Length: 275
Length: 294
Figure 1 (spheres, one colour):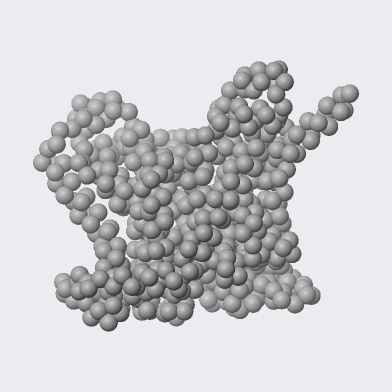
Figure 2 (spheres, chains in turn orange, purple; figure 1 turned 120 degrees about the vertical axis):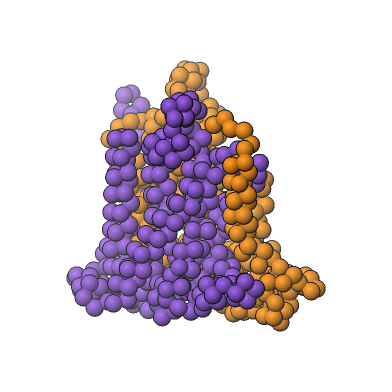
């Protein structure tokens, strides 16, 4: 669309910037108020803080047990991604390369499970996982994320692998490479673009997830960021000075993640939606 | 010799597909089937004996449960409003941000950012905005709209949740619409321009038909987000005032884990699955058919 910067574009530019500012107003409110004392929040919610109360952040950091919950969120997200990438890429590869009836049925099972909403299985899930001894443990919740993430991730890998040529693999087999060798040394590196997409989409989901951790992580020491924020609000209802600081502490990690990986995230969302 | 080779083949197959299929069965398939079984019992989640209840749970849901009816209505109304406004705004933003704007890249980020925040945190953030922020804006500007008791009244609380979900989701669908619009070949648009198409014609006859696949996927995403709304709803209004904004997902959660009626909850959960699966499947089939025609 070749256009010059006309008056019309200038007007559109102004309109869009105004819209953008409206979008940002909530952030303005929570940031300035997170730096006020409680009484000042009640008096002048819209005004700039008279004096910055950095202590709100210190208190919120301490009461959330921020380092611990951050580490829990991080461990869960990283290991879930690792498990999803390793096992789903392997499965999708074999399903594509062995096109028989069993593969077809298994693939259809994975795909059709994608329409099951989490709330439909959460009740028996708690029972099954408690009998398997997966409750209240980080490895346990990682296994659950592998189960819930499998459908979508295998679907994406499956679509991608179909376009990967077979010839190189055959050459490697002739040269005496084992099945695992062929996959990890030759095929897996070729899957990098879709692996990045899968990691990004799963990270956004797992990091922000609330209901599954609420159901299966009862131990205080295993709380994730959303979970800790939830209990924090229950305990300090409407104590907005601390609460807002806690919310901002909860938001910051993903914002940093986004600014570093912006291009990949946008690309990941687009690729994840085309398939 | 032959059978040994076949055996190794099967072993390799199992070692590749087996682990994830095993976990998937344990976490998704078995609970799903068990859920169907629980829905026919009056299990309370604690007692060791599970009593068979036949179709009684379903009969009770359809005959007596007024709350689930309200939750269902709320969820439908919310889905319609949220899907409509999220896609309209997302598409409008995509149109604006595919023009030659100087601040294009920064603005794309601005509109996308709300999507990065966990739904639970978003609900708490907006609780503050509605209760304190809106009141402050109302005092400054005198607009009566901002002085309403936003979360204290059934109608405004409904629109409150719609506003937050649009604020969160518009940026995500915007990204998909932008990609689709940028994919339209320049020549097609130039040719249309030369033939005398104005902006409206261009939108109606070129852009909208050519981005149909993006519309399919964005509708699918927004419908399933809206229908399954839990976190945001849970922290923003908690279903209130007087359960007027209780979504189906919250209703199921409460039934099972607060009221300890697992059997009844499982029956609701099964119906919930049927509704979600039917709606999303029909929508994809319908809009896909349109894609082919276009």
